[in-house]
Amino acid sequence: MRYLILTLALLLPAIARADASVNSDAGRNIESGQSSTIKRDKSLSTDKSNGRKATDSTSRENSTETSSNRSKSTKTSQTSASSSSASVDVNINGLLLREFTARYERDGGGGGKAGEYFGICKPLTHALSDYPVIFGEGIVGRREAQEQALRQGFTTTWANPLSVRFQHNDPTFSRYVQCRITASYWVAEAGKRAANAKVNTEDEVSRRIVKVFAEMDADDYVFQTLRQRARDLWRQETCSLQLQQLSEFKSPDMQCGIFSFIGDTFTVENRTTLSESSIDGHSYKIAVSSSAGDAVAVDDTYSSDDKVSLTNKDGVSIERFKESKKTASMNKSRSTDNNTSSKLNRSSGNNMNSTPTKD
Image (cartoon, rainbow, N blue to C red; front, side, top):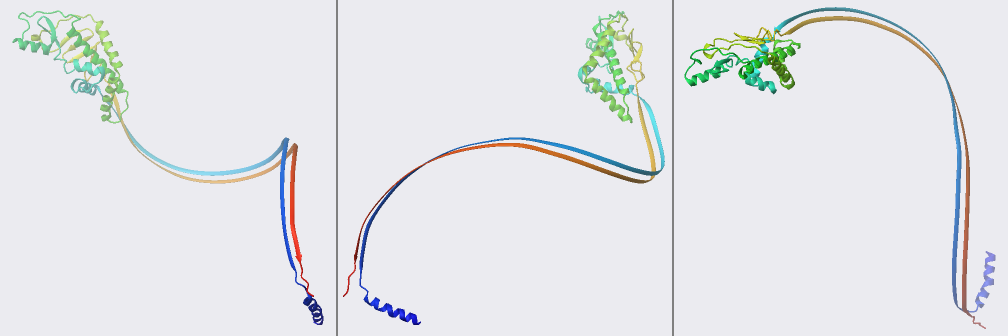
């Protein structure tokens, strides 16, 4: 504290004697510069690598297995059965003729060429109405002869009845005979096909026959084959016979070798046909079989199974790996740097200092 008081005592006289001063300074500085830099770099790098890798593996395994199996089975079986069967041969000749008549001659349900042909000549239902007889100087069917006789007002065709010898190629007679021969072949073919079926009820028999005729209608080749067979047979015939006059007709009495129609019996190639007893000399039948059976079986089975299995397995695996790789790398770089710089500095100034004194 004492030193501080001394210091202030020394400074106070000096401060009391200081003079006033005035200082003035003015200056001007101009600086300009210019710089230019150009840099060029070039770089080239090349890498090349070669590698090779190889793996070698060795594996070895030893296995030992032991198995033991013991099985025991006991079975008790009781079976009781009872069965009954029956088989009946159903004569289908009548069913064939009934379906033929309904399909082709009454209902018109027949299809194909067979339906068209039999629908016109009607071999069964028109057997009597179309039966050829002598009328006037020609041969016509009975129904047509009767209609002509009624229109003419008399029923006797000849005032003095004479016999007229039959001509084999007469169209009326030829069409009549060939229609019945073709029908015999057609129904016989249907009988052969239907008889091959296996049925269980009599209702199935009728359905089978309907199906057979439908299948035959759909295949015109079948009808054409049988129709040609009838033509060929009639072409070989050279028979001659005497036909009845309309006024003398009582019942069919036509005998001409390969074909005859006497009473109500048709015969083709010496075989009775188109009747329930015989079609082309055959009686077609279908076996209708039925069976019923009851069976009861009771099985009791007891089974036991013991199995022991032991497996030892040792394995050793060794793998060796080897890899070699070579790598070469080259890198080139080139750089050029040009730098140009200029600088100009100008400066001017005035400085004035004035200090007044006091005496």
